[in-house]
Amino acid sequence: MMEMDRIEKRVELRAPIARVWKAISDPGEFGKWFGVELEGGFAPGRTIKGTWRGDFNEEMIMEAQRKSGVKPAKIKLPGPHAVFGIIQKIEPEKYFSFLWTPFGIDAEADPEREEKTLVEFRLEPMAGGTLLTIVESGFDRIPAHRRERAFLMNQGGWAAQAENLRKHVEG
Picture 1: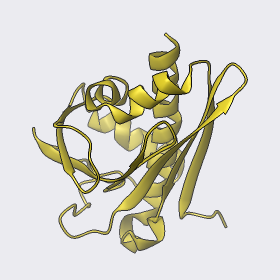
Picture 2: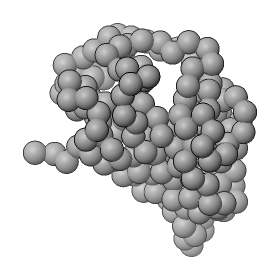
Picture 3: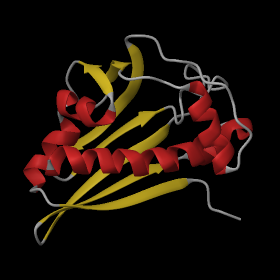
Picture 4: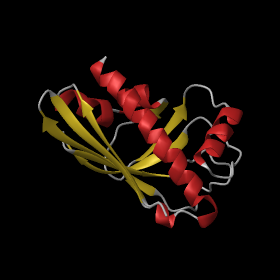
């Protein structure tokens, strides 16, 4: 059986740590590659709100759920100024983390009451750029009826977001 508590992506970026750091720690930069317009600055303990950009094609998202092997759930589009997450820790050019509701567009998600997962970004220098490790953990605390779906959808989501980040910092 597949371990479903932790997603880890390691990405080699041809960009200096300072550039990658700015892309993940500046709300405007983060929003450009992630697809959300965030409000306010990042600081530990701060709740960040934002407005999702782009289209949410429910049928396409339901098909992605089917392909991942889970029973699809309808989606609930976040409204403007929705809570994106809560900033946890910032160590300049080394570490950035926040809590959020995984696969929060799941119509069965309850962002007000559900436990959150921890998303971490770790930066390390490497020849020619930066090694970025993205970890999301804590899926074992997500309600059982949506845990597998949240895990599998975020696993695919982080692969796509890592590529978005690559294009953003290497572009």
